[in-house]
Image 1 (cartoon, one colour):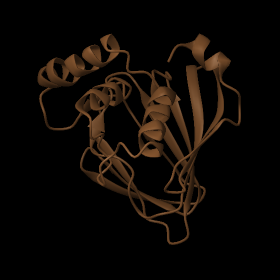
Image 2 (image 1 turned 120 degrees about the horizontal axis):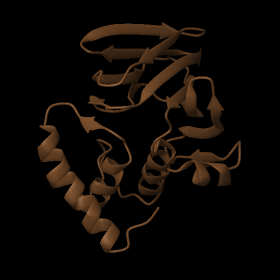
Image 3 (image 1 turned 60 degrees about the horizontal axis):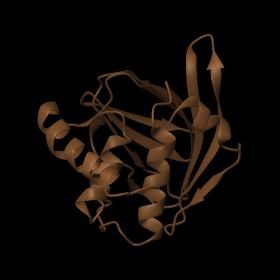
Amino acid sequence: MTTNSLNEMQKGTRLVHPSGQIVTFVDHGTDHQGDYVTVEHQVPRQGPLNGPHWHPELTESFTVVEGSMRFLVDGKEHILHAGERITVLPRQVHQFWNTSEKGLTAIHEIRPPGRHWQMFQVVHKLESEGKMSPGGIPRNPLWLGVAWSCIDGYLAGPPKLLQRIVLGGLAKLARALGYKI
């Protein structure tokens, strides 16, 4: 998502998922470290929040406000509790889970913002319309391409070139066919 598109977003915009998860647009801007977007995640259920992936350019920081999270970053496990923070650097393979008994609240900062807010919107749309599998994968391969194009990175495992060809091709086809958030 471009900075202009982020400027159109209102602070406090909330994406409320059928599962009860809420993603809130907190802030965006530019400071001495560059462009950023900040969101808040409220996750009521334990479990994985994503699959292993990496970003060529993005740096992500997570601060746990309430509850606890488990991170696996380049094969090293980190358990964070309220008040603790972790930063994931470009090219680090990472995955994270909500390990909280009573729910998780975490602040997530993305630098540069890339298309992350758009990714949250795509996932929200698909979940709200019942278009996701129980494992959190879009049932329609074209939506999978759209979602993949928004992670500003790559899945861990499949070669980068293969992902660009297959998932990137699906994303281009989806755009050509009018798939929109």
